[in-house]
Length: 90
Image 1 (cartoon, helix red, strand yellow):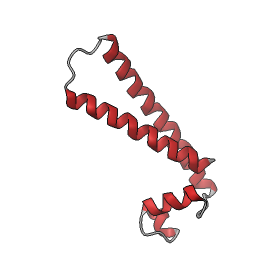
Image 2 (cartoon, one colour; image 1 turned 60 degrees about the vertical axis):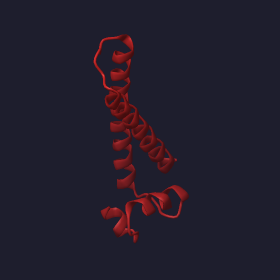
Image 3 (cartoon, one colour; image 1 turned 120 degrees about the vertical axis):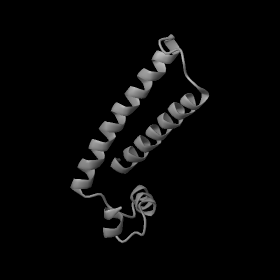
Image 4 (cartoon, one colour; image 1 turned 45 degrees about the horizontal axis):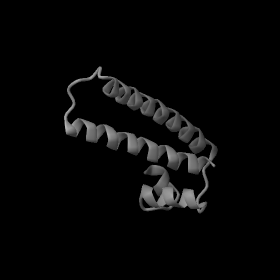
């Protein structure tokens, strides 16, 4: 949020859109931070995949529909955030 405001944007979504469209630039520090965040998202995605594997293998026997919905939504959010960061770094 602070970077968005410092770059003259009113919110982070407009700033992200400008970065993706090439209307704003990423400085070296931001690139470093994005790479670190991308790495952390990769770890989170791996953890979610391990949970999914355990469920599919029958190691986890009690899961509510809400639990499954949350896992799927979280995985989708991690994948979306990773894709956006990859686009910013390209």
